Image (cartoon, rainbow, N blue to C red):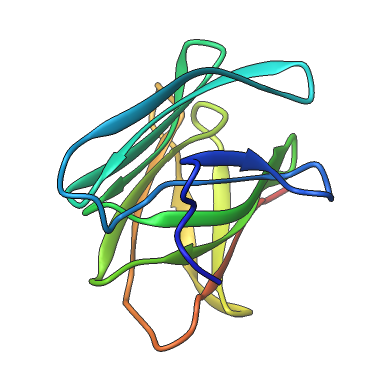
Length: 137
């Protein structure tokens, strides 16, 4: 896979892919409609941010390309591509416990804070790791 030249797109499966970590200057796309929601993406080498209906959904530092991002009441699933290790912040349900799997390896449980945010790191790999965040309980 490769970076998303159009910055954000809807895939055939209904999920979205977004971000371009190769850009030196910040670019953004406003009001991208997918599945009845409006998305906003800001991306470049240092950061990639995604908002859904005006609310922060995902942030990757440094920048990344997120492939096949999908989210529902049970959690989220996506693949990530980057030139370096990245720190991901994801907004989920407040004060809820989730388990995080990277390439089917359980890397631990995390409880979201009052704002529903969870932070975790992903090491850069030769392939794109698949991230699965599942609600516990």
